[in-house]
Image (cartoon, rainbow, N blue to C red; front, side, top):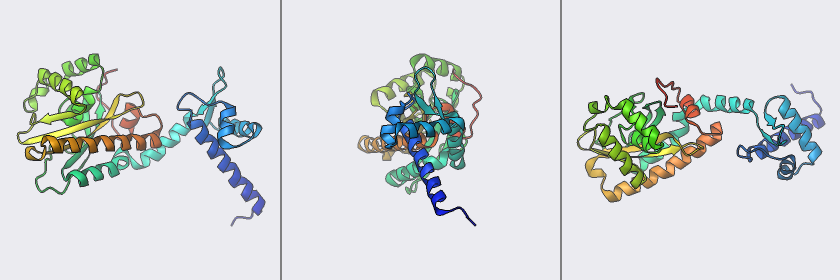
Length: 283
């Protein structure tokens, strides 16, 4: 039973509200830090009050102050707390609304994949209502980067030298997947860059087409991909354009959900959300 007087409860609530407002103001710095005067202006607090609360937050590791610029940034403890909250759900849970919307719109099979070194891992799969399913990947399946629409979308978004390194490393494995070899992968990467999305036109399975778009991290590098696979007849140019637009919309929505959950969206953080440990790394 709470025996604190009402005045103390009110003061405690006000302190928490002010601390939360200050954390939001600091977060608006987008990694560059915020000045005390800007934080005070955003929160409507006096500079002395804002400075006192910032000092307390710094003591417990929720904010940090740059000694050179005096600007305030979010502390590492907040990152660990955010990761703990995100890990409560996991990447598949964070992406579930996006996946379900795509399955409802397309009625086909939707995949979520992440990069894992030279490979890609299927994190989730949702099937639509169309009776003929294209189940080319199971959750947990690993493929060399470049094999599949989502994998191609991620590969195409990397720098040229990195792509060459990955394709050379995966060259012995490509012939195990349909019509693929290193030259074909490089050609489809160029096509994907021209189209703005990846298009797997019966390269792995006869009678199946798929399109994929990347989910980009804070630095523009791909950290994951969304893709839709269907039988060839359901991937006419007009319908493909619609699906690509829906994929791009959901990739943006997923990026926003990731930023809310983990802050700076990087490959390592996304991989951690998915519970993945890669066997190899490029950098």
